[in-house]
Length: 215
Image 1 (cartoon, helix red, strand yellow):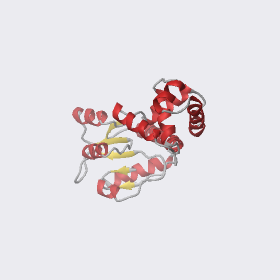
Image 2 (tube, rainbow, N blue to C red; image 1 turned 180 degrees about the vertical axis):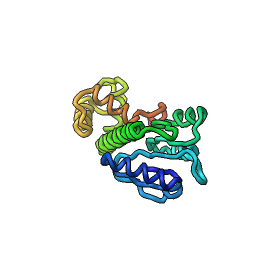
Image 3 (spheres, one colour; image 1 turned 180 degrees about the horizontal axis):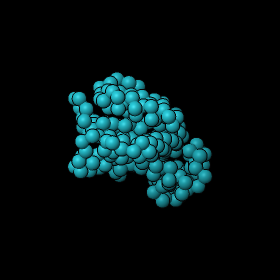
Image 4 (cartoon, one colour; image 1 turned 90 degrees about the vertical axis):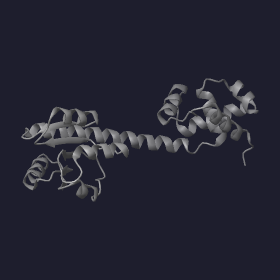
């Protein structure tokens, strides 16, 4: 997705990207870009620094403030070191000064597309993993928290006021639902989803909820 206010240069970038099989969408301003729909696939934004209205660097800051993770390749005819530093600190893939080599732009865009593809795959994997944990009952969640904190079945049974055999049944059901083949794998899943309560009060609330009889 190319944002540049120079129509001739914008069209030349579009031709270059299409020549290597990439689908290019072209915009004259950030407002035009915001009025479009993002493709349902990996995206890389080729963004001019100096634009009418909001600048490319300001737009980069706005995207970061909204937690929008778009790989950006900056292009400019008036670059300087402070601009470059600001863009790269903000996570830009590259900062290219016109005139630049076609291959430098293509290489940067391909890096951006690969990064966005990896991000999308990671987010999809997290969504699928989160869905598995969402089917756990409050009691299974409480046992999960106790397990990853290193407590034994006997200790969990004592704290929750249930028998050790009941803990084993809930533990087995929980492991099956989340498709964890081992304790280390379960811990990795919990860490990825950041499921552990941040404080002891939240832990106690989860435990008290699990102590209530199931309907």
